[in-house]
Image (cartoon, rainbow, N blue to C red; front, side, top):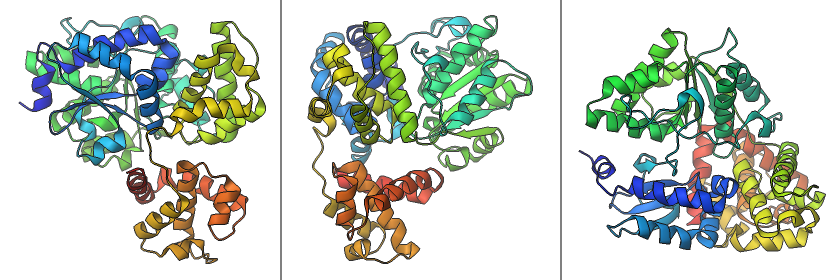
Length: 474
């Protein structure tokens, strides 16, 4: 029996402790703040047996540390009679210290059940607990744009139970691009449209934990039936099943059985199926045969639209009206350009601090309010450090990156370095351009957009960027 399995079955399991603590946190913080900052965090056990709450980004880690960590410590201590310590790290920090994605013990802190026909108690004969649907993730709150309009249209079609559907449907895109929102919205709409049909939504972590529990309780037949009787099965972040041979085998046969019976399957992943190299080739091939829908980085217009819609929704809930000042909205849209979830989280911070006053907030005031946790726990990174690290990664000299040369062997690393400078520093586009041989700000903007496009379809470039991000962030 491996360590994680053993721990998952003890009386005071970390999963149970975190579930109780997060239940209280959701109640105290409210759905919006909890959903933006704590819901994406995962409880993990490192190779040395230490427990760690792992966030996808440094921004999320710093927000939790500043606004919620003391309360988390109190709730953890109150619910863990074993007195185990809990650490807080980003995913990159955790993996740099030897942890792996598969170490997850739980992804959804609060042990709720879905609405509608999907809800099943974990102690029922089926032995399969579904993951909670989040009420705020509906089609009404999903802002569509060029980067996600095809995926949005496909989700709408599946939710309507229309004939001629593709099977399975795979939505893919990096963290914070709206995949979870889309799957939740699809599930809610499908339940509303056909309440007599069985809709099951699960994260891959919940699928994995339910599978392990079914094996240990010798209830595999009930587990299989609970999934294979679904009219619509949705599994979020399927990439996390990678490396678990028996779980992948079960998922493969579950998908095959459902599709053979004409039932519908929708999954999400952080990459297209062909790039999920940690997943068994047979399952990967099965996924690739479906309709693969990429969700790309939200462009500036879409990010502005998301902010406008978010302020409107929050205003309706809290009793204020109006919109952000254009310069404030522009600052947020530009500063949080690679994750919609971080963009919404930053807005949540402003609204939590000043409520309806957010509509009259000046740019200087917004920057002041956000500054304490934008880079609170991260070291200050310079453009010079970025150039040196990038040159080393691509086998070049630092002088090559600021030279006038336009050869592809120089241009792509230079664009990557500009992209990193935009992500990791507070330098303006003109300032970044000056530090790359006196280039114009439009050249930097083109480089940033080009890298954002390429990293989605170029696995090697994506890996190079990931390595550089880890190295520079330390």
